[in-house]
Image 1: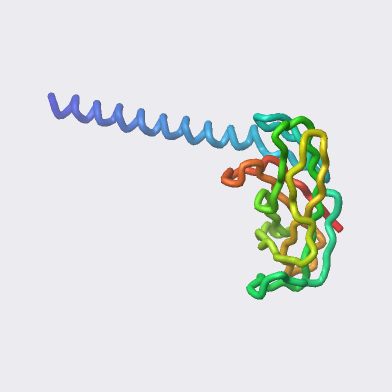
Image 2: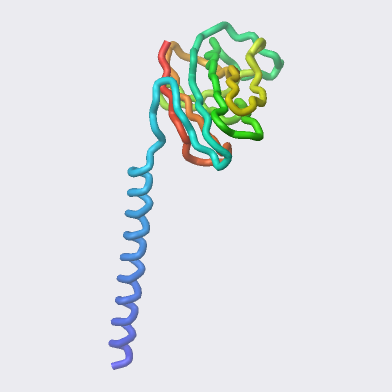
Length: 167
């Protein structure tokens, strides 16, 4: 008789664990589907705890590699992404550095940042100010397409905005 109750209890426990795992898995999938990063062509307004700011991709151009470092990644050409950020109302200033961006080609391959000469370096901008900077990526194909992900928090796994650019 005890063996019978033990098997029933074990069955109930296993069934409970399976149901919990299914519910948790479904919740994670639903969250990812409900909250994708917005895809925009060139401009996005973002909220931070301190205030809001606007990020805009103003141009993408393809150039010959001209590295600032000897150990630059191999590149047939370089995509320079020119971006502009406007500090709408963050009183202590705003700077958006190159480490906030990742880029992918049309096949989904992540591109390496490239130390190209003569880039516009990011700088701090006060409230109501605008600044233009650029970031470069090594290209080894003829796609003429980039998917550029922007991360407010560089340790985040999910981008806040995804820009799609063709040239």
